[in-house]
Image (cartoon, rainbow, N blue to C red):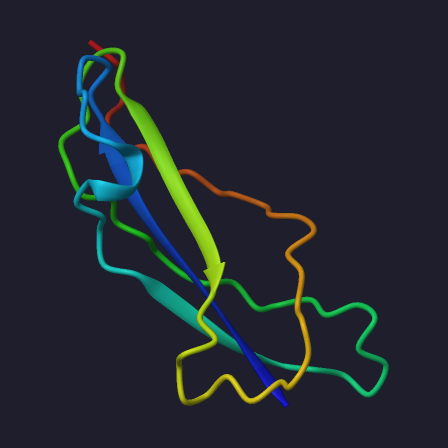
Length: 98
């Protein structure tokens, strides 16, 4: 079967009192990975560009949520799938932080 992994992000202002789970998130981006015959270890392809909701400011926090989208019709793997590691690549478009 296949497993669908998804990621979404939000910029959280340091003074924002909104509950973490109730905030606006950017659009989720997903990737479908086929489970190998020996499903003890699966390496998913890169998810792609995740654009966070919110506006970055001084002392803001970037919150990233990565999850299995089991409700997606392409997720056909009939067993548990656990996320063990994540490799993030961050692109900064400004040449300085001034």
